[in-house]
Length: 369
Image 1 (cartoon, rainbow, N blue to C red):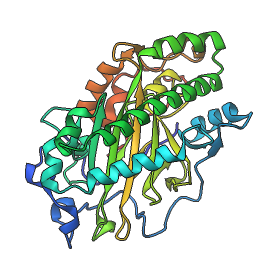
Image 2 (cartoon, rainbow, N blue to C red):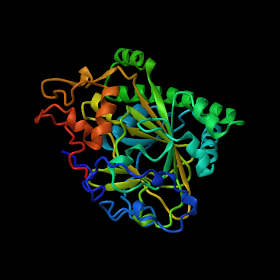
Image 3 (cartoon, rainbow, N blue to C red):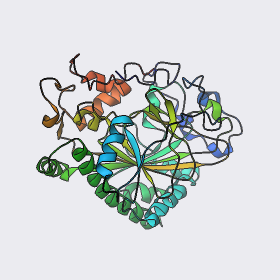
Image 4 (cartoon, rainbow, N blue to C red):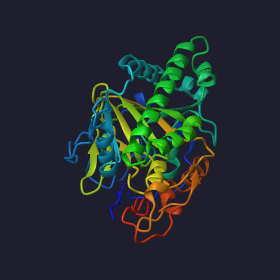
């Protein structure tokens, strides 16, 4: 049974309410790392600056390759993450979304706070939503978009919001198209018939995604800071664009943490918890984190793709037989997000069916401390 990262932080993740003042820091003005951001341990000796990474390389797959579906299946099974090229997203759009993110995060703190995420809310500006599970702050700021960005954009740029909205809406449309294409390839790699894939496509007609823009400012003490703590995504899949600065790391069994270097025009594809459920554990959702550095600002844009909130997600019938019983009970995305929001990385284990004889079984969450 594959193991999971065992000591991501020394402290046990738990729901913690941080003082609001820590959300309002001007990262650019800080010359020393505040104690509230100083992590005692990452569970390893790895940092972006140290250069101590796993020697394996995350697969890079061209979607123009006739064997792309086969390669994607291998990457999903052995990594839970891969990069794609020749994906049909214009470089100009990737440049535009990066510029939009820079323009947002370069605003003064008081201006960004006009679009702050409200208590218990999902969208808007603020720290990573997983922050509440950790006793230390993360050296990052984020902006979440679900649906139209118009309301928040008007708060940020009262007289000049149209360009930002146009870029976001175009990016959402293109990411949704690519996500559907990737789902077809991934389901095909599991041996699902074209007809069953078409049936799934109908279910995914109501699917959409949230966008998460992330900023990782230059850090005065990156060896003690964490940009984004280790977690899996509560999605079918996540499409990530990152600028030219490294920082994303994924966890691989028998290797440890591996850096996913930015490649020109490439996009990172993470397998999420819902696809892990659909595949009956064959395709693991990948633990990943973001590290920071002292010389370069890092920016990333994640498209978090999932089904309509009421669609029931369960192991695909084609993957179930007498020797491969279902590992997980059916769950809607809405229900799963509620479980994840309360129990974080333990969520998959809480919807697990006890089948000790299932060879596909992967123990998620129980060793993640």
